[in-house]
Image (cartoon, rainbow, N blue to C red; front, side, top):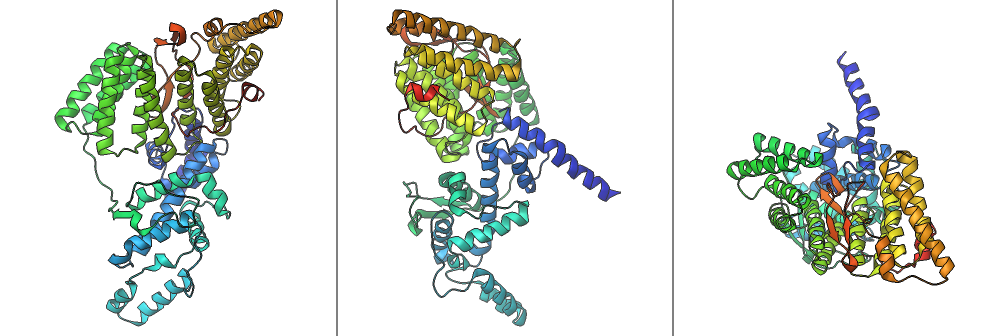
Amino acid sequence: AEEKEVKAAAAMLTDDIIPSVVERFRTLDLSPVDGRQLSDAMHAQGINIRYLGAMHRAAAKVPYVQVLCEREMVARACKVLMRHGLRRTGPSHLATACAHFLNCLLGSVPVPNGNASHAEKKTKKKKGAHKAGSGAAREEEIDPRGPLCEWGTESLWQSLQAEVQRKFDFALSSDVQATLHRLRQLPLLRSVCQRVGIQLLARDLDLEAAHPVSADDVLQLFPVVRGTVSACKDGREHLTLGKQLLTMGNLQKAFEMLHEALSIFHQTCGPMHSQVAQCYGALAMVYYNLQDLGNALSYQQKAIVILEKISGWDDPEVALGYGNMALFSHCLQHNRRALIYIRRAEYLLQLICGPNHPDVAALYINTAMIHLDLQHVRTALRYLHAALTINETVLGPEHVSTATSYHATAVALSMMRAAPLAAKNEQRCHDILKGLLGEEDPRVQESHHWILQFSARAKLQAQQNKQLPVTDEAEIGKGTLKPVVFAVGGAREAEKTMPVIGQAGNARKAKRGGKGGRVGGRIAGAPGSEEIAVR
């Protein structure tokens, strides 16, 4: 009877719960950036980490989730192999062993000459341990150089494939270079170091080299253990209720609940606590919706200071905070400062998750909005093209975020007096929204309205056989580009309409709509408007 219940529970997990969580990832209701956020999201739904392989298979239509799952599986397999090897390594060779292992993982290292395979040596030591006493066995296990220095790239990845298959029932690709290209070397290196507890020197690594890491780069080893984090039930309940009220648009009640939660956390947990930072971040969003941008920026800065001290400067929530600070600064017309904040968020997301992530695409849209206000239309088009490419790659061509990218591109093209191309992009946006939401949805009707405007402008341009002034075209873009704000669980468009200063002194309105993400890698190349439109 118990066996049947266990099987029924496992079947419900794989057939119902995991697909529902993957669907939330696809719709960006949840948008994990790294392995820790992915693990937290799984645990919150009662899914054990051993189901990472099943999660990968269920996310066949959500490529960015597959990358996160695969990267987390490889990082956890590396943790098992490294811990086993470091226990048998002399203290004076720990840095060398760690550097060699990371070089085998990321570079191209042959197996050292004259060394037997790791499996053969492990078998010999086990036989010796049975013949000799336990004390002699322990003496044989300590090798000054350690077993990690016996690995080569090929043998290490074979061991990783076996470990991932054993722990997660998932088969890694045998093509090492393709796997590294898909997982991205820098985010993978960060994940492995966090899992094992390795602190590396902050410098530019040549990840294309055969030996990207040297022994001098390994600064320290830290124990990674499970622990408890102080929390307050009453404060957590007030914080959760405040966030729900903020989502519902009840700003006054949300403001009261969040201030009460902040007071409770200050008294019970102290000022330097992750939930205090969450309170500050939520209050920043309340002030943003109340159009008190100065306080919004101040509270978001407090949240970032706390998170950088307790979680590290490369924490995903820190990148989230810098994205919001860029938005608030942009609304205050501090566009140069907003670009500085956005570049910081861009750098952090490149380090954490790589360029192919929905949050990266959403941050590109925010960056394009700032450049449009600075009248850098061609630069804005390059960012919008990159955002569109990412959304189509990681979410698919039939997604609300992809439609948002097409609409934003249409607005930028209209400012370049390319009305026919703007109409084509807006038509593509309308087709996607109509297929997903139906003709009666307000967003579909709004898109149809913009198609009519762009088409009329295109006909007028054809009749006049000349381009219109930029100031006239700027009026078409009024009220269409919507900034993305970042919250725990994923990025969203602004909760409430508010004025955002646009070029030529025009005000644009940010309305609640679809969901997006944060900013990722820098854009190489400068595609023209025709290249963007013909998709």
